[in-house]
Amino acid sequence: MRITAQRHFWLNTLLVVWLAGLVLGGRALWVYSVTPGKADLTPAQWPEQAPIVRKPGQATLVLLAHPHCPCTRASLAELAKLVEHNEADTWILFLRPEGAQPGWEKTSLWETAAAIPGVHVLADTDGTAAHVFGAETSGHVLLYDPAGRLQFSGGITAARGHEGPSAGGASVLAALHGAAIPQHQAQIFGCPLQCQETTQ
Image 1 (cartoon, rainbow, N blue to C red):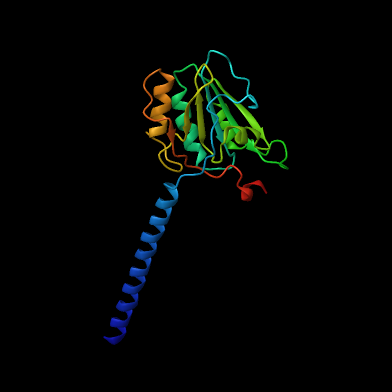
Image 2 (cartoon, rainbow, N blue to C red):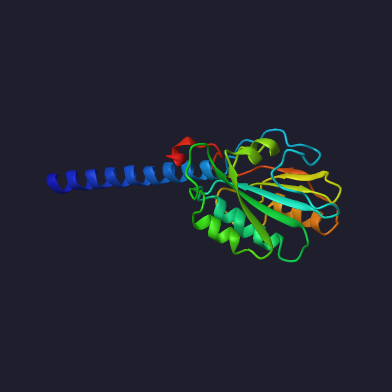
């Protein structure tokens, strides 16, 4: 009887510890998924230093991405939905950090981006474009109107790696269709663009 009681005690203890681990791990994952990334000041007017030639009279949509950030796959999926029925000149710029070999940026995310109809995909050598646009987090989207004025700056997902409706996505969609924009900024969920760990 004593052995059985001790066994039950340890089994119950292990069960409690296991459940506590699940709860704490789940909470940590949730906090991570809803913690936004950083963003610097975005130019209110299209920057002349940008490595993209803007087409006058046409809206320009830009997404800055880290090619090794798994969270960015959701941003690409949402971008594909946004550009499906609009005429914005759309660009996806993948970071190629200083010192990285040509082709470092051409991951499966690059292939996914290149498969989106009508989208231009470009390597952001040394993070020049990210610096010019004030982007510090992968998944940062910018929309400039036909006159080159900033209409939106931020993310288009509701959390890291989460596809589905978001405030940012709704704002971009409204702007592309000439409707009132709910908000001109939104939090960005993704990996840091200058994350050194992924450049090795």
